Length: 607
Picture 1 (cartoon, rainbow, N blue to C red):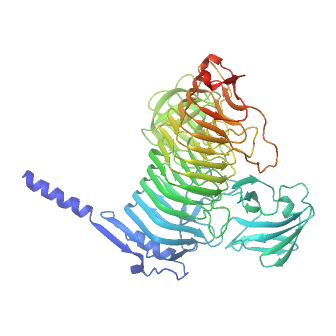
Picture 2 (picture 1 turned 135 degrees about the horizontal axis):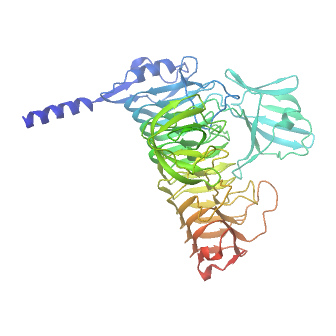
Picture 3 (picture 1 turned 90 degrees about the vertical axis):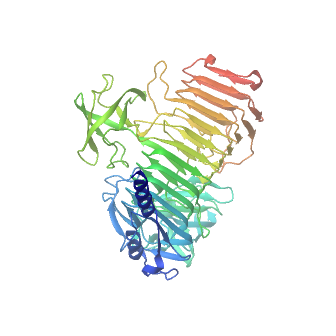
C-alpha cells in the first residue's frame, strides 16, 4: 500500500513538473517586423499553465511594444507620484504576469523596444518567475538630450541627440514623444569624459530664442552668463512626474532577472514592492546609442520586501537618481481609536495606496523624534480606510510610550541584502541607500564618482518616511573612487545619518556596522560620517589621495581628512593605511573621546 502511494505521489510530481515550451512564433509573433506585438505576447503569457514549468521563448530579434493594446492595471507604487501631480495610477504594461507560477522568459539576446510611456513588464502576485537574456530600450526615451557645442554668454549652439524629438514653435524649443509632451523640466548636466553628473537649470534655455540650424542642430540666444553650461557637456531633461516605472515586481515570490540590458526605463527603474526572495544578476542599467542617461530615476528600488535580496555583477551608469535603494516605510499614527485599534497614515506625497500590512504581521512602534523602538505588536486585522489611511487591529494594546504622531514599521517585511561585484558610476546622487534590520553584505563593488555619498544609511520618520534601523552591516573589499563631488563640504564617502531630531542617553538608531578592507580614493578629504550609531568598526582600510578636479570648478576643502561622529558609541578606528597629504582628524559631538578606540599609529587628531 505504501509503495502504491509512493508511485502515485511520484506520478503526480512528474505531471506537475513537466516542461511546457511556448515559442512566441507559434502565436504569430515574429521578430524584426516593427509591428505591435503586445497583444499577441500577452496571449502567450496567458497560455502558460500553472501545472507545468513553462518557458516562453523569443527567437532572437527585435520586438516592439505599444501601450495602445497593453494590459491596464491600477498600481500604487512607492516613491512615484502624488495625488496632485499624477491622479491616475493606471499603468500600461507591456508584459503582464498576474497570478502566474513557474515561468521563464528566454529572450535569446532579443531587443524589446517600448513606445510612448509604458511599464515594460509587471509581475504581480506570482511565484517562480525568471527573465533572462533580454535587452530593453525605448524608441523615444522620455529623457531628452543635447550636447553643447559652443557656449557663449549670450548664445549656445547645441547638437540634439537623434533619439530626442523636438520642435521649435514661436522661437521656443519644445520636446515631445509618442503621444506625450513636456511642460515641466528636471535637468542634469553630464560630463561623459569625467563621468560626472551635476544639477543644472533649464530656465535659461526655456527663456531663450531657439533657431533651427539643421535638423540636429539648434542655436539658442539669451542670457547664459550665470549658468554652469560648458561646451562638450550633455544637457539632459525630463518631466519630473513618475507616472510609470520600468519594471514592477509586486506581491510576488522567487523572482530572478539575469543577463538583462536595461538601456532606458521611464520613471523609477526596476521597482520591487512587498515581494520575497529576489535575485538580480548581470543586469546592466547603461544607456545605448550614444545617450548619457539610462534611467529616469532610481535604477533598482526595493520597498517593503522580505526574504533575501541578492544583487550580483550588475552595472549602473547614467541615472537621474540613486542606482539602488532598499527600505521600508514608516506610517504615522494619526489616531488611537482604542488601545487595540489605531489609524495610521502614509505621509510622503509620493508613497501611498499600497497594502502595507497584512494579518499576523509583526510591527515596531517607533518614537518619531528619536527613531527609538518603544515596543512591538502583531496585527490582527487590516481595514483600508482610504488611499492614505489604514485602520489596524492589534492583538495587544499598543505601548503606553507611543502617542499620536509617532510611527509604526512593518518588521515582517524586511529583507536581508547581499550586493556583490557591482559597479556604480555616473550618477549625481548616492550610489546605494540601505535601511533594513536584517543582515547586509556589501562586498567587492566599485563606486566611481558618485555625486554624493557612495553608501548612505539613513532612516527617517519626518521626510521620506523610509525605514528602518540597521543591525548588521558588513562593507568589505570595495573600492570607493572620487565620490562626493556635488557638495564637497558635506559629502562623505559613507554616511550613516538617521534623521532623529532628539537625543537621550543610549538612543542609538543604527548598530553593528563594520567597514573593513576597502580602498578609499578621496579628493575631498571626507571619509566617514556617522550619527547615533553603536558598534561602528572602521579597520584595515586603505585611504589614499586622488587628484581630481571637481566638476563644480571650485577648490575642494583644505581641511584634514576627516571622520565626523555624532552621538556614537563603541567606535573602533584601527589598522588603516593613510596615503594622504594631510593629517586625519576625528570630529566628535554628543559623545566622549573614550567612546572611540584607535591605534596610536593611526595618528588621529581628535576635535
